[in-house]
Length: 155
Image 1 (cartoon, one colour):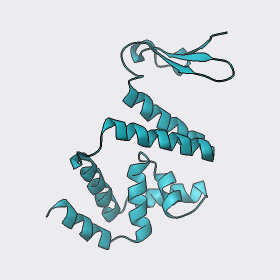
Image 2 (spheres, helix red, strand yellow; image 1 turned 60 degrees about the vertical axis):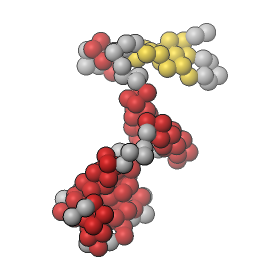
Image 3 (tube, one colour; image 1 turned 45 degrees about the vertical axis):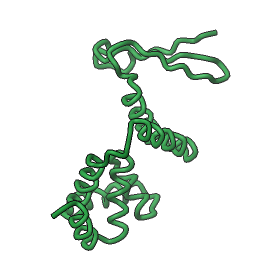
Image 4 (cartoon, one colour; image 1 turned 180 degrees about the vertical axis):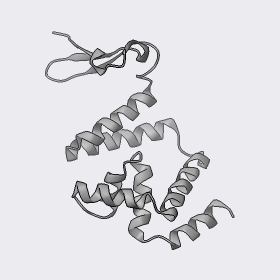
């Protein structure tokens, strides 16, 4: 059975909201709580966390998520530029919604794709009222501590 046939069969066993949950779960980088909140239109974190964990134990949900991931791997149409564009849109959306948790997740993904975790020291220049640089030491220099990152004031 090919992917399209499997997809049709799986969708028939899911409600529209469960299907939306699966798509959102993969789309947002595997954040089950946020996927549940989006698919089921709730703002209650506790309810979303509890119910999303239940959904992730359902066989048809697990299988549909795996199918979506397989589709993404087989799709040659997506490029690094597309991923960066999508992540930049997500960063802006998180800023607009004041969603700091997902903002940092999207920024982390952008840093990984953009090479900021490469084996050399990297400087991210951010222009605000006061120009400053964030200096990220190499992972090998972190000594298991995030405090190693320094803020360099450029006054």
